[in-house]
Each structure stands twice: as C-alpha cells, then as structure tokens.
Image 1 (cartoon, rainbow, N blue to C red):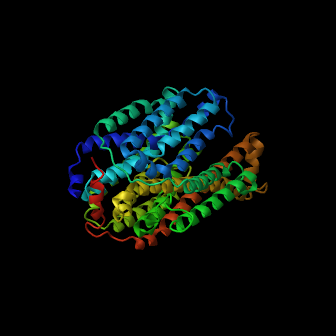
Image 2: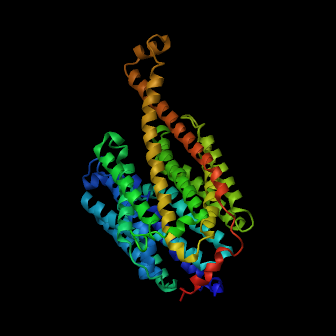
Length: 512
C-alpha cells in the first residue's frame, strides 16, 4: 500500500547517509579548482594541460549520468548506490596518490563515472522514503546539499591546500565515503527494478553528444572557440549525435528502437519539461556566479583565499535559511509563486551586483550574496518538487538523472559564456578607456614625466577598471536571463492533491 512510504524505517539514518554521499560528490566539482596551481608544480604539468584534472571529471560524470536509471533497474538502487560510493571513494584516494598528470586524469575519469549516479539516486531515494506531503522538506534538505556544496568547495579546498597539501582535497572524501557506505549498507532498503533492455545505440548517441558538447565548452575559451578545428569538430559531433538521438527517441515505437534509452513519457510531462528548462537556468546562474566572484575578489580587490571564502559564506547561509523556510511553505503556498519570488530576488541581487566597484567594502558582496542565496533557495526547492509532482514514481530515477544532467549542462554553459565574455569585454573596455588617455591631458603628462614607472602603473589600473566593467556586464547578462524565464512559470501546473501519488502504490511494491 502507499501508506508504507509513511512508515519507512530508519528514515533519518538513510537521509544522513545519502546526503553525506551527495555533498561529497558535489563538493568535488569545485573543491579541486583552487588546488590546480599546486598540482601543476607537483605533477609537472603545463598550464594548458592541468585543466584536464577538472575537464576529465566533468566530462565523465556528464556522460555517465543518463545511465543511472537503467543501472538502478538492472542492479537495484541500493546495490548501485553502494558501488557508486565505494568506487568514488576509492578513486578519490587514488587521485590523492597520483604521481603524474596521466594518472590523475585517469583516476578523475573513474571518479566522475562512479560519482555520476550519486546525485540523481539521492533525489530519487528521498522522494520515495518520504510521504508526498513531506516532499517539499525532503527537497529542501537535498537542495541544501546540492547548492551549498559548490559554494563551500573553493573555501574548503583552499584551506586544505594551504594547511596540509593539495592531496588532502581528495583524501577528505575517505572518511565521508566510509560513513556513507556503511550507513546505506545497514539502513537502506533494496528495490526491485523493472526489467528492461539496454538501448546501447541511444546511450552511445547521447553520451557522444554530451561529451562532445562538454569538451567544446571546457576548451572553447582556451582554443579561441570556432577559430579552432577541434572546437568545430566537437560542435559538429555534438549536434549530429543529439539529432540522431532525438530521432531515435521520437521514433521509439517505430522501426529504430523497441525500448528507448529515455522513455518518451518523461518528455510528455509538461511540469517536468518546464522544470528542466528552469533548472538549466538555475545551473547557469549558480555556478557562473561562483566562477566569477572568487577571481574578482582576489585579483581586483586583493582578497586572500581565506578572506574570499569568508566573504562568500553568507551566500550559503542565505540558501540554507531559504530552504529551511520554503520546505514548509511549499505545502501551503503555490509553488509557482515561490519560484517567482525566488527569481525576482535572484534578479535583484544580480542588479545590485552591477553596482560593484573596485573601491567598495565587503558590505555589497555580503548583502548581494545573502539575497541571492535566499532567491536560489526559493527557486530550487519548489521547482524540484513540482517538476516531479506529476510523474509516476517508476520514472523517478530516470527523471532525476536527466534533471541532474541538465542542471550540470546549464552550469557548464553558464561558466563558459561568462568567462568568454569576461575575457573579450575586458579587452574591449581596456581599449575604450585607454582611448581617453591622451598626451594632451596636462595632469597625466606631468605624472608620467615625473615617475618612470607611472606608465606601467597606469596600464595596470586601466586593466583593473576594464575587468571590473566586464564583471558588471556579466552580472547584468545573468539578470536578464533570470527575468526572461519568468513567463515559463505559466506552463507549470499545480498538481492535484494526490494526483501523482496514485502511482505510489506501484512504488511500494518495490520496497522490501
């Protein structure tokens, strides 16, 4: 009976165990970033090759994520969870022991493959072990781990690197992974999945499309985008593979496939598809902002690593507060109104950030961070709840893997776009500002004649100001992107009481 979900034994310990695994995986998307310079020297890598430490993990995770649903059905969700945690933890230790760049990249690939299943599995399990009326609170807890992880990653990574060694960025996963593994082993119930064949062709096409697209985004700025043959080839591969995959799925009941890799029923659910579009935008704003702020604070405002982490910490506090509140509100307030309020708060914070200057104190950074944290929390929880509200429980693991994949792709797109625009706009702004510095300005001429180093100092200051304007342009762009998705809320339907829960009886049948 559906009531079995209300009586899930050891719900608290299951939640703790899977959240440990989730936070561990999410932290690893950003925790290694600040340790790259130390890795470069230790591993003897060049500036243009050390970034493969990040790229290999992201690409491997992106390709493996869509297979989570099939693997959970094939091996059972508990068994897959245990394999993923054990593999991820072991690969983390191997990364810490790596003695060359080749070894590091290989181990990061393995880490990405095993870590790909952790986030969608955790979301699916939390939805299943909680009754429908507690889904909002469950998604609030899950969202806190997903969103605070990227914010805390650079701070924790910087502290571990400065206090111990870059290798501890990976060793830190060992105790967390062990606790998560044994918690799941003891308390998590196994599931009986559906018997279905593996659509190898569909997986291969989707994997090729995602992998090529991710490579294009990660290496585009470094290789001058479409001026590079590699980027052109990766773009063509991504487009062609995705088109073949789309045709393959659309004709699933025709001649090309008997059972598609992604069930078309998922893409017929209006709430879920709209949720995918909105979570893509949230991915853009969340990680793109976090990619911009640390270098801005360190390079332009001169903040040390630890101070940067402390100044950005209130963003995570705002998110936590928001999620604690919205987890209860989502049961009484229309989720669409909460999402709208969150988007407006996020947009206001980005507008506030367009007023940043080089001579500002910490107050604008902290205020904008708290407001943006509150806004993103208001969006993430109701969106994660309403996107799954009208889906049958049997589709949850597949849907969660697709949800996670789209969020990660949004993050990659956002980071690539804002970093490219930052570089280009800095050059354009530098040229525009320098055009106003002419020998006909007597005060300027006197300063340059009086101090031989003045010209270099002047150029450095112009570069700083140009970069600050470029950062502001990026914040403004993200504000427009956030506002443009507001009309999408009209497509979301408020689920009828017990509407999707009717499928809960099916889910209870798979719980032992």
